[in-house]
Image (cartoon, rainbow, N blue to C red; front, side):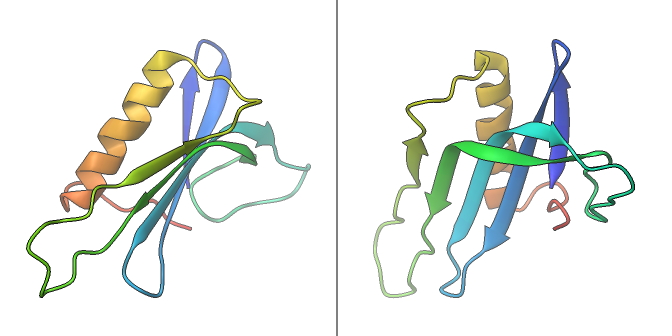
Amino acid sequence: MEVWEFAGEHYCLQSTELVDGSRYFELSEARAAPAGWTTGSGGGDFMPGPAAVTVVAMRKEEDEDEEKLPFVTFAADRSLPFDILSRFTARISELLDGEGVEPAG
């Protein structure tokens, strides 16, 4: 989990690799963690709130000619600053391209 601060608000990025090799990414507003609770995953004093945006990047099969494009789902009841959405998509691109360190989680 990664936690970002923007304009006094905190946001979480979580990612995981699924059994089939696909990648799942989630962006949410961060919530204050209960006192004395430690995530142990780089989130510090925060934990994820309800997902605002999810991205699933499907693994390309060896016998497929074309890579499957990631698909995105937006929660209708959530809004985010554009700068945070841009950072989220840029970070996903880095991780899918094998750049940067995978968020602990």
